[in-house]
Image (cartoon, rainbow, N blue to C red; front, side, top):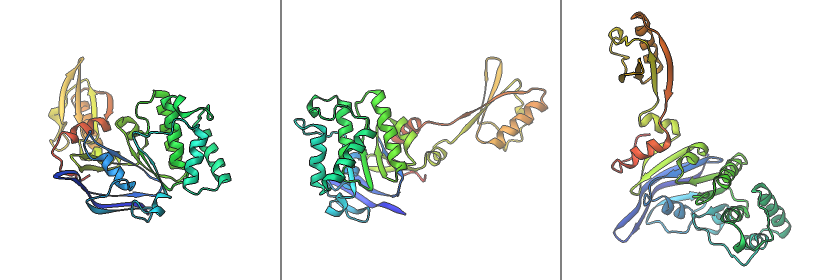
Length: 306
């Protein structure tokens, strides 16, 4: 059952359209990726979902409520890309302050805050935030997004500007939140992180969604998997044309056949063996999300069928 529904969401600034006709649904417990080049409309979309920006048109429903409603805010945790903190406060004081804003009982707040900081491995919790490293400050901001125990979390570039160790820790923590049943809308420029953590993805370009689905569905729509069959003999003369290779090249004394599916792999193997050769290796090649992203982002902003 969808916990977040978006229908024809639109945002205009004067004569400029930042987001045009976005529609998607997110299931409970899902990690849903929103990616795209700078200016694609990602952050504008996330801010509309968080109730920070009023849409020009369309609708969004988050956990049964319209963005901006107090009831929705209590079920949402939002981590913006830039998250200024009250630097004179300690981490504990800061989080207790926000828990009080959400009317979280003091004893529940203390337990929830210490549990979050323990899971985030945040040391020096009584240190002033202004004296913390950027990684420690980001962990405090994540703990703030969790202080009201939300059903839905929106993470916009959660690991922006952090060192690799802290980044990996935050990515792993995001995965744990999903396993705990939290629904997470996740945006990041590092597409490896998106690829490794997200259940489904939308790619935005020029304010529109241009591709959507699981990574495998998007791959199938943009090149799919290729099989590279290495052999000692060409064997192409024995192919019937229906399962022929997409490409045949010679490399280091071998012939490389590039084919689209396992049926074609079998056809190449049979043809090579019939010609007196043998298959020496079969390698699977799948495009990364970054490769797909570069292809899709360079095309006109017309939505893919994926």
